[in-house]
Image 1 (cartoon, rainbow, N blue to C red):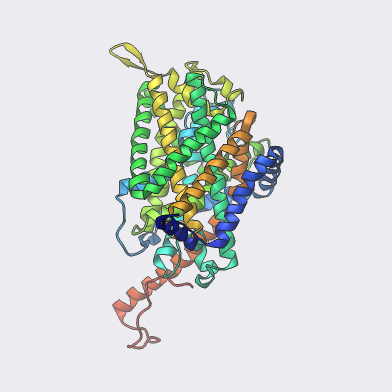
Image 2: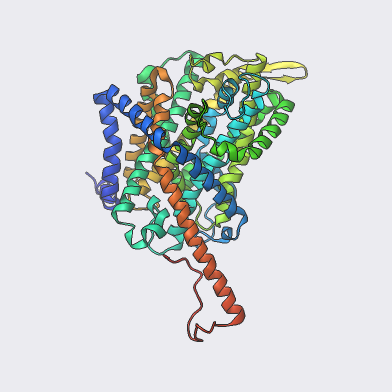
Length: 553
């Protein structure tokens, strides 16, 4: 073995937090090994734990996510928004910052569900509204429900963790860049290497593996379905492993290149292709109807936001609907929150709390709302008017992942009165977008897990990153195979299992920020008052004014 190879191995072993790495790796690898030993046992275990989580945690997810949204909106308009993450200048331009936050956060889910989700609400509307299924009245409500699920709330849990981790890591001395740091005021700075902090970081590793692997499973299944739908290539389980392995190699290369050369450049490319597909769909679809539909759906979402956020379906048939959709999405976002929060913190140094909160929930919503309105609205219109047939998807005979291919295949552009089919071009672009979003999500999440298992190092070793990349890829492939004929069932159950417990961590992170921001603001006001009127009677001439720096209190 050469000296350079020995050096790489030594760096890998020296940087590890042995407890977090060992427990995180054992939990994740243990599931993979158990799958190969007894697939039915793993499937039944996931099903049992999922049902128990829903029984006890569904109401808590709804309430906690709503409170986090309200808090972030207050940060945008309130005085705490001026507080800065560290004292340096931002490392990236705003556009690159936004593109990385969006691409690495939840854009993979946006691409997957964009052509599909509105169709399900059109066929089975939220019981809260009492609309008749597949009626004209169900069309705007379907888009309204989609916008609600993919605008503020999901983004809010990523953002709250990013602000909390970044604030305490960059504004305190010797606080590492890791998930447990979000709870610094509650745990105490001296206890960040204690048992409670270790448990939180281990839970974060496991939640990230489950949540991100679920997303990669969705995207991988979409890619495999696209090959089968467009070109009749049926890969089977072996093919799934091959496709996921190929994508794992791609995101590993991007990850090793680093944030600037890999994630940033690919994120910028993603956003360009994302916008291009959205605009072409808008032009090829029912353009004027989409504008009217989007206005009505967005107005409805704003007007009904509180009732939609806290609707549980209690005492009626809506409970199962809420758990299948809203609770699932909040759990999915929560399972991503440790990884997305850590990555957001990593790229947010030097920005104010207001900038991060605004970008995290407002700017990203501004990109998401047109996508679901134009792509999702066109799909619902096409089904309602008979332009395209999604009945197999709605009946469960085909997976949700094929909706995008059915939609794009049915679109055409009219030039000088001549209809030009553009389905093949759109499908090709869609598959490229699926792949590149897969890569940006996977490499940024792998970077985050590597940071978690090295005590918060901003640049973990390549060996560490590659190890977690392989674990993510294998877990995604297993969840895809476990889904089998039931489609995304195993993927959705895994999300609830890993995400629901993290609702408590996000809630505590919000309380930590409230506790510290209120103390910091109070110190700033005291300092300003002292400068204006001089020392108070209790403060001698020689005693310094209160510091505006954050404290552990």
